[in-house]
Length: 394
Ligand SMILES: NC(=O)c1ccc[n+]([C@@H]2O[C@H](COP(=O)([O-])OP(=O)(O)OC[C@H]3O[C@@H](n4cnc5c(N)ncnc54)[C@H](O)[C@@H]3O)[C@@H](O)[C@H]2O)c1
Image 1 (cartoon, rainbow, N blue to C red):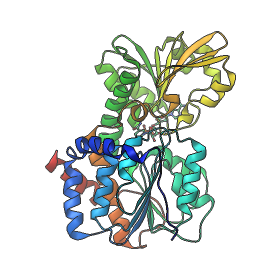
Image 2: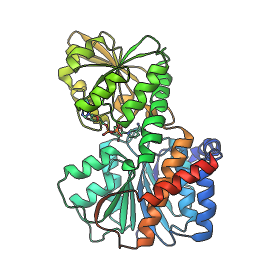
Image 3: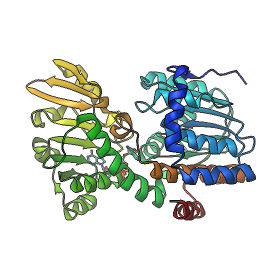
Image 4: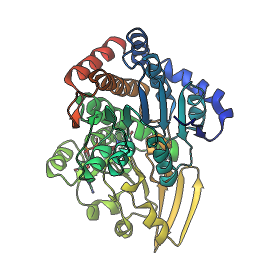
């Protein structure tokens, strides 16, 4: 096994990362309970685990649970646009953990990290956006993991889009009813509003805000916007969800109808190019655009850059574009606004989500290769056990 060196911004930031970690970890009672239990039962003894998740303080509390459970080696790749450099530095102080996460990572560096990580064998892959699992299937190495988990909708769609048969068990945490209601709806709703406020400092009351995509996340965002006094509007391709949006108090319509009205536009569809260059002439003057879906490609930022006559940074996290006679603002280069401008989902929400991840990994570990191949939901027993844990500790 080759010696690996962490690829992080600055190891000197570890003390700063530790200070932030303490605030978060002390408010994650479920991770604490799991850590104690895993320390006794060691359900992950000797396992080698490759992870691709957002590198922010809550992740470190979860990594400690895995280490308590007996994991032998961990590689952690950050997601693009959400890495906190101090957390990456602190995480890299853990024994047998190699971290690949810099704040300025882009697709090229991210793909390089995935290539490097997959050049060694791993028994469990933990993915967010299917960077590890999709690459494994596109260029299969000589080893096959016991199984993988996938955190999010975009990852499930990305893996399906390869059209390749899935060659090991992939537990889709996003399909858990617990994750959908607690994280995608309640958590993302709050944290996306938090990210927008931190980036812009604007009042939401009275603003017309267009949410593109009324899935679990979009519904949560719209409800929080309503609570903040904004006037939510929804574009949704599915007529059933469009009807739901209308009956829940949103103005619904097509992009042609609603973009000219919107002060702020949030994409959260899980698909590429929900907002493209074709939409630019429809934008209201000085509209603000942002994305809450997993990849920044929900907004065609590349095409905006190529077509603009002028772009400039107003302040950290706000870029102005001039295209034709339209001027508009993009938050955080289209990266997930709740992670790029704030701390991501609320602590308790991730305490729950990461418990689902850890207990799904235990299922994979204990089954030792006997789970069916292919995409599958979180086992019902894991959903129920996680809900009971949260009820006992929150
Ligand atoms: N920011 C975060 O912290 C966070 C957390 C969880 C999930 N996510 C991401 O948010 C995205 C949405 O997740 P979800 O759970 O709501 O998924 P979902 O599948 O429940 O909802 C997506 C909705 O978008 C609609 N849609 C697709 N293309 C559209 C388009 N062009 N215009 C309008 N609507 C369109 C779909 O019909 C669907 O109703 C995914 O990328 C997911 O990975 C982000």
